[in-house]
Picture: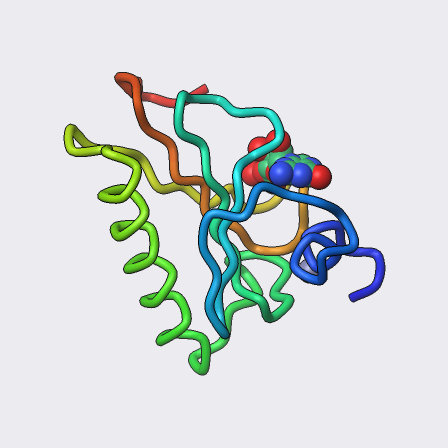
Length: 113
Ligand code: 5GP
Ligand code: ZN
């Protein structure tokens, strides 16, 4: 996926503030934080969106959610956090490499905008 900016971030071709990585997932700070803590958690494998997941990705998604909980603890989000994946145009997705926003450090509101 040569044109994908998140694949380029994983490859180190675009610099990022990496907070965690292992053989399957990569986590880095969002360039335009929407909360005091705003981390993007992505699979190293290119998957465009929630709509493109297969049954074979179930364990990977579980691993991402587990990573989010681990990072939330590490970043002191003891009072809670939000984990969200925007999907498609109406969902507000702008980068088509599936990602989960870990947001925290302030009171979140509902419904979201
Ligand atoms: P989406 O709008 O697709 O749900 O989220 C994409 C996120 O990626 C946005 O929050 C945006 O700020 C972030 N983003 C876009 N380009 C870059 C980049 O080059 N570096 C980093 N760290 N974040 C980016
Ligand atoms: Zn990608």
